[in-house]
Length: 232
Image (cartoon, rainbow, N blue to C red; front, side, top):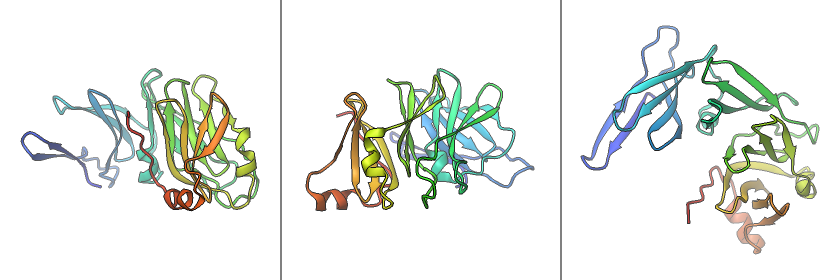
């Protein structure tokens, strides 16, 4: 992608925003990953994090990272902004067992810290994750991993495994898709293979399938890359 586009619904006009030309990189991408009532946040050329004011359309560079981010665009789109701590969180993928986790990018000084998640089932073919969701109520991040759900505490910086899922996730056939979201009751919805979309309730420590009909459960849950639950 070469830039970011904004569509004004009143004037029906597009406005394009491009990256600042930098002789040190040929990457001209602007990848949006977060928004608030006032700003849209983007990765710029994989080396900077910027914010656009939705009223004035002015861009502000928040931080320039010490080295370019190598993650693919899908992972950048799932990045999380924690305004309270002034950090951006991004999944840290690797094909090497024991090297996957989550990376904290400080918007204060650009420093990076990676936290590795536990390897529950050694030798599993897929080792990485591509999606996660911020849980404001619990101050944590939920990750849809090949080992099942992980909850990463933003206060303790520790991973928690969900033991009630063990009967499902221990199977050699278990795999994750990408989709994950949180409903208004705080339940975690996540897409898996071959079990379809599962719903985990952290309050009761109970997991259930979205549909009781096994055929419908499989069809609806097949290759779900995104899950979005609206306010209703």
